[in-house]
Each structure stands twice: as structure tokens, then as C-alpha cells.
Image 1 (cartoon, rainbow, N blue to C red):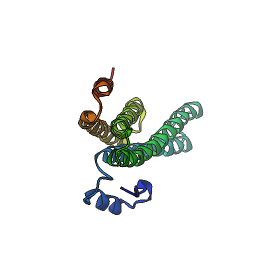
Image 2: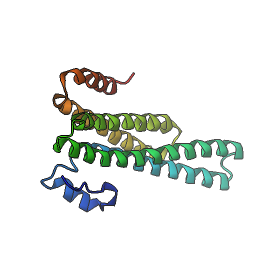
Image 3: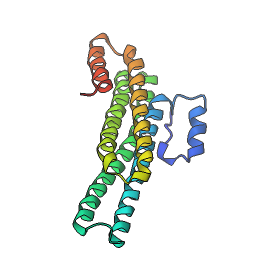
Length: 191
């Protein structure tokens, strides 16, 4: 694995062609992270539509200025968070490639990285899910389905990332395993 492709540089079709190729990367971990990115991007769209709707309501005199400013601030902050999660998810998709490279090349840190990165993906998706869940009741009704879809994508991403981490547990030394098992359980059944 000499060169790890840059995920962000792929066009969508090229990404899926590379994913379906006989290669180690992109694969399961990067797929989980890309699904998280998809969820964050879809939810960013929901935020933008809500911001547009607030402006339209204010222009039409259907909302007070104070109410509109509070809603606008909420959706601007939520959009900012969604964009950060989008970038983080793309970064994690890339980091998954390096984790695979370390493992394949026999780097002693490889098994740990191959387990840690999927756990980071699961943490990131947990935050995406929480962001969407908090914002959903405040959303413009016609696009709540988009927000729900984004949450479903994030939930699938978290499950997939935890599956990857779980499958990588046997690669670890016996003394490392319990810490990672505990993290998987904590992320699979959040508080």
C-alpha cells in the first residue's frame, strides 16, 4: 500500500469504483466515515433551508424580528456544527486509509489505529445524531424527512464503525482488548 488515495479528491462515481475494486482502501471504515459525511452534508442542507425559510417569513411579516433572530442564530450555529462534522468525517475516512497502511506494513501501532479510527467515527456520528435530534423539532416541517434521513444515515454509520472496530479487536494484544471492548459497548449503548 504505497499510496493512499485522497478521498476528498474523488468524484462520486470514481469513489464507488475505487470502493468496489480489489483493494484494501477505501473499505469498511472509510465507508462508515463517508456515510457520516453524507449525513452531515444532508443535515447542513436542512439547516440552510431553515435559514432561508426564516428570511422569507421575516420578509413576509409572518414572524417577529426578535423571534426570527433567535431562530436564525440557532440554525447558523447548528449549520456551523454540521459543517465541522462533515469535515471531520472526511478526515476520518482518510485516516482509515493510513490505519490500514500501518497494519499492512506491520507497524506495531497498526492494530490499535485500525481499531481507534472506527471508534472515532462512531463518536463523531454520535455527535451528529445528537445535533440532529436536538434540532429536529425546531425544523421547518417540510424538510423534517431530510433531517430524519440524515439521522438514519448517521445511525447506520455508527453501527458500521462499531462493527469494524469489533472485527479488529482480535488484532490487538490481550492487554489492549478490554479497553477497546469497553469503548465499543459505551458507544453502542450511549447513556
